[in-house]
Length: 428
Ligand SMILES: [Zn+2]
Image 1 (tube, protein in one colour):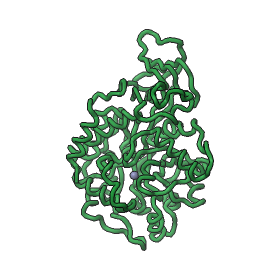
Image 2 (tube, protein in one colour):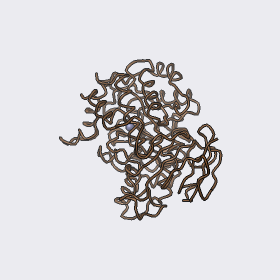
Image 3 (cartoon, helix red, strand yellow):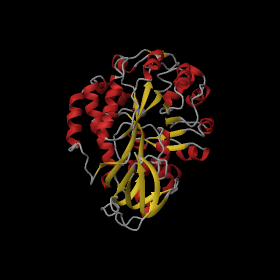
Image 4 (spheres, protein in one colour):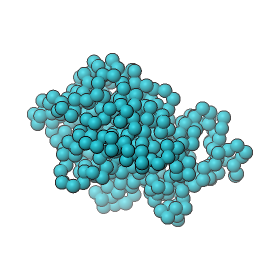
């Protein structure tokens, strides 16, 4: 048993002072108060938040940051640029890039990540293993969302397209995916989850088989990111993507719909009880549109966040964007309360990728300490600090009871240099 003494902490959605969190082997066993740290307590100053989950990540997209802003285009032209990076990935290069990206996520305050992994290259788990190793070495909690990707896309009439040459490394048959999935590592702070890329890339039968074969693992899918996707799916199957996922038995507590940007009223109602991963900084970067996050929450969906293509890695920016996009649309403020926004990043995000979060007994002992006296956060109320802070204000991150980030530094050292090196290796 060891303990952390927290100067201020958000417990059950409320700010409390002088909190003691006791854990046993990385799981919280008690949450108490003590006016001062006791002998042996590890001390975390500032405001300590529960662990923050980045529920939707494609680690290799980090190599595109700051390199795609000229020449106009849209989601579909950006995707061509992304494919050109993917063809340069092998297990060693992906390990180096993911390890650096995961360190960047930790420095920004993400203690857990759902890695939506489809760059398989071959039927082995070598690429997945590289990601699991990268997460362990960087110190981040990982849910490896092992992803089925069968088709290169669809014609406008819905017929599946074969993979383009640069997509071939993504594609597995459903039988191959099912045979290898159980070999994806799941130990300690790494967990296995399932995903289907989207109904552009798989058929409803594939979804149903994966639902049946993966027990209670988290199940994620891209859903209705683009109007063109909806049109293709409707042409192929006569229904919206959400309706097709529902018919295949995918919706419910283990399911996370990623993006869910272009929905109709029936889609919104059907997602009650599922999670929806809004990725606001990516959705605005790609010109996807603004998803109906408030209406989804009102219907009973759990809203969570992801940084997806990592154009920006800053959980506080995702929360401000989630709220800010709704303000721009609704011409009103406070669409989500600060407490709701923090839950999206923390407890609900953890649930979406299969972990128990929060500062409470039974949760994993993941903590994120934020400087409350920085030029950005000074003067902010403690119960709104996460709407003032940036990634640069994260001082310490604890994962599974182990302090990984300390004083704003990661044990791997110069993470910028690691990123530059790794991106240079995959520069297409
Ligand atoms: Zn994605």
